[in-house]
Length: 258
Image (cartoon, rainbow, N blue to C red; front, top):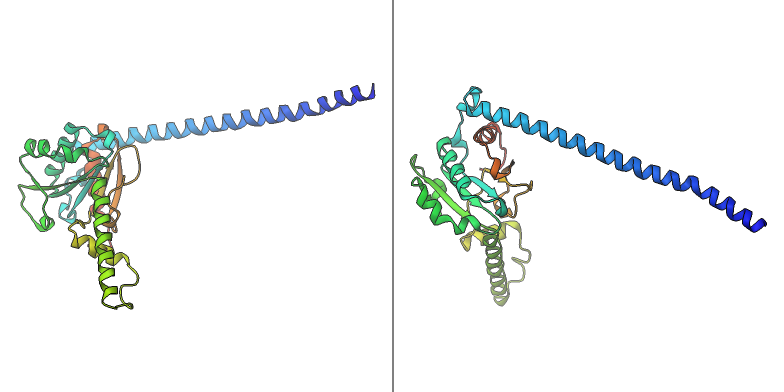
């Protein structure tokens, strides 16, 4: 009899603990749901404000965006999520950049979808020419130089640069030079990338179109002093937002780099 009473008492003592645990779980789930709803509402309102502001900029109501010192933007990089690539949107974006006055542009996506479409892009846009080494100093008001890049370019460049440094190291060792070039620094890698023809101009501004807020593998050695701005999905790109991003960049005072 005493054993049965002890079992009943144990069961009764465990019930409050179980109810407390269940109540805590429900409270945590409810708190998470409230936070999630608040964040969604915040970004929804932010999207409305951004759309309204973009419309006001595009329509010329906000006059300050009409006076852009685009000459400060020597080289612009556009990063597009490969799954978000739409040729007509890209063509429209390049036309907008030409209207603004941007002269040197790099189009990048991870999988190289844009690079595969470069013939179509060059055919559709008569004011575009394919980028060549030294074009960053080229200035023609009627022409935009366009570079195509992908993640494979960066991997190949690093492999060739690393091989060049390795061969240089072997040569120094064969000559009995054990004091110099023991450690390879960033400066050595940059120089090697230039030697293999894969350094490329460093963009002043990089605009990211896609869901991810990162540069999606754009060569890091070209981003030492680059301003990076997330623009949202390419499908919902806006002329006003583009104009605002470039205008804001022209107001930035850079203490380092070009």
